[in-house]
Length: 323
Image 1 (cartoon, rainbow, N blue to C red):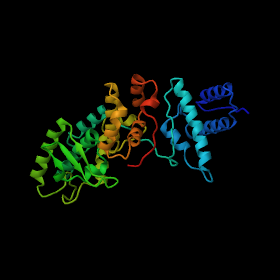
Image 2 (image 1 turned 120 degrees about the horizontal axis):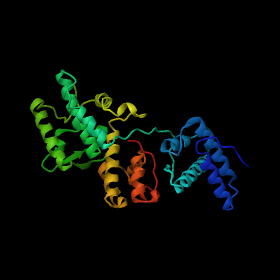
Image 3 (image 1 turned 90 degrees about the vertical axis):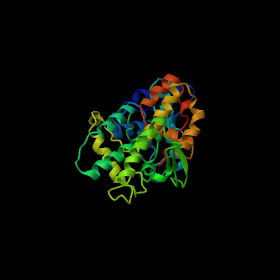
Image 4 (image 1 turned 30 degrees about the vertical axis):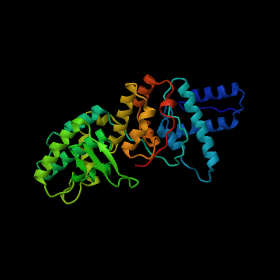
């Protein structure tokens, strides 16, 4: 059985089949799946020159009447193709134990330089409205907490003054996702920034219990308000118009994870030992959730190649998780 392959991965598909057959495998089912992958790529991702998380997630979508066994079989073929491409030195996402049967698009993860540019833009006055100016400065501090402490969107937005201890530099997160409480430690230089912000807030709105009050100081800033502010200032930074994907405030939490892992690997710190601690710090159920974030960015693989030639040892398997 033979097919004509038309996607940009045709040469890799043919190479994988040749390798399997030369090793003594008939590989009929695998070859059939690879042809369907080839057709899928032509139809859904005609410009794809590798297997990305986005490609694997779309391929993994459940089909009407499909058994779990068949689903796993076709996912196994994509895993084999990704592994083969990795062996050739091509960056490819390997869908280990890929059980998500619904498509979840990848969001853009901002770099440290882009976050810095975003915060600088927020220092520039754009409104004479007193409330709008206050909300902008609130969001600036919120974005810092998302990026520097990895808070979830709601954890920062619903934070109360009484749960921020400036003497110890500790933020207490209560009743977060999964009804969990946890402690989050501010970076040393973050304590002074938060202290200045709280002093100004206590002076302007002494009665509000919220760290980030909304238009009505008796209520916290709204989710839509945070997102609108992020979008308004993100669109003003120089690189925004060149990006195909638009980030969200929650992407700053993802960026926190990526920055930590990259820093550890570049400094020779064992990520496998550190991941359980980072996972608990973020409020994740397991390190797999934290690894998932790392698979969302291309620059992660540059660090992996520098520090570890076998990426599976660094990022063994990843499952998609809801936040």
